[in-house]
Length: 206
Image (cartoon, rainbow, N blue to C red; front, side, top):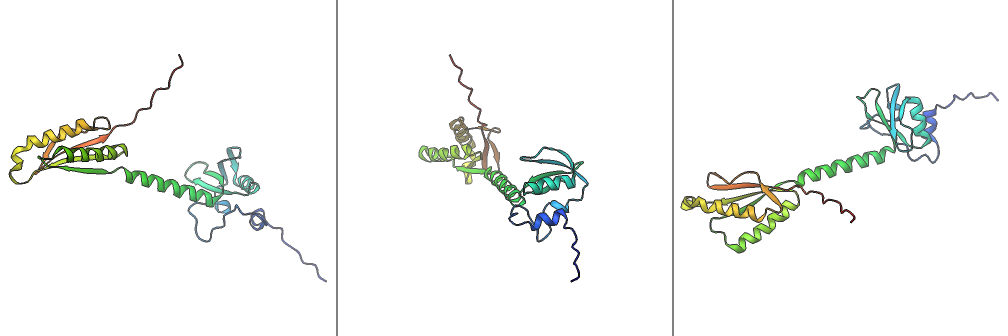
């Protein structure tokens, strides 16, 4: 029987086909990042957990990733040399998307909340709206308070100014005005920004 010659399997193919090697990511379409054998640079700066950080040839960096049953992910392709991280690519993408989602949620949470008054707002309504404004400021939102004048009520604009100044005084613990009340059309308004929370000084032993 004629012998069959077998070509030696490359390291990259061997690592992908190895039984039980679950950490490696094999993309079905073009990935967000260059990973593993798709990395073009001849040397990379290696970062990640459980690795000795430094500059390695790409083949050496791949071996390290393969030994840890992880992926070599190019995270900063513009650096010289490119920065690559040893990590499970699926987990890397999940963490990246989660952080982006959290940042997006935080940016959305900082909104401009409107509180409407009239020149004749009574004490009960004033207190009710002030409590809402306190909550808005504690959540990191700005508050746009305004007094709406209707018809000839604009003649009593000083009443609107008093309402807004009283409102700012009520919220002094939680926010501070960005400026004095100003008249825009038939509205007198004032923006109140949340106060940055200062860290309490550490207690000193006596």
